[in-house]
Length: 138
Image 1 (cartoon, rainbow, N blue to C red):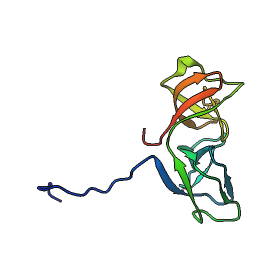
Image 2 (cartoon, rainbow, N blue to C red):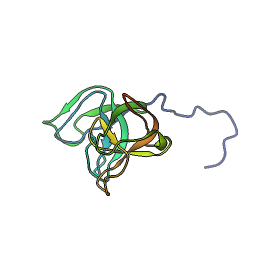
Image 3 (tube, one colour):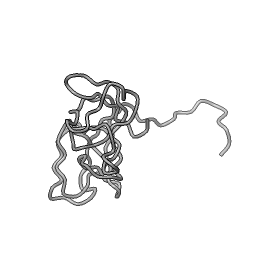
Image 4 (spheres, helix red, strand yellow):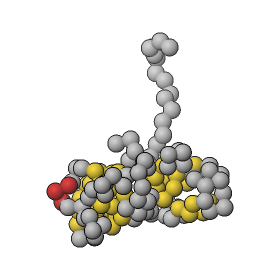
């Protein structure tokens, strides 16, 4: 293809919400951490490796009786507050560095000796929890 020589209407994706095919047999709860599994389907976050954090589920989705891709989960990217793991807490000194998935609403300071996937980048830590940037493209 050659370089454009006139204005063009370039397709764009506005906003920070995307649809993502859901994994088989999952219940996705609104406001909890959404990840992509090794097969490319969205599911709730858990303590395991090889997950890619997508954002948070915007709405509840019940695909418990469905197969891979039978339903599409709406997922939002951005800054969100999650619980700080009691046994491996994220500290303020970790702002700007990765934190790691413990479950669908909890993050930790370390990868748990190689047992946890990255959640996102720590934005802030306060008495209520950890603010994390969840964006797979960041």
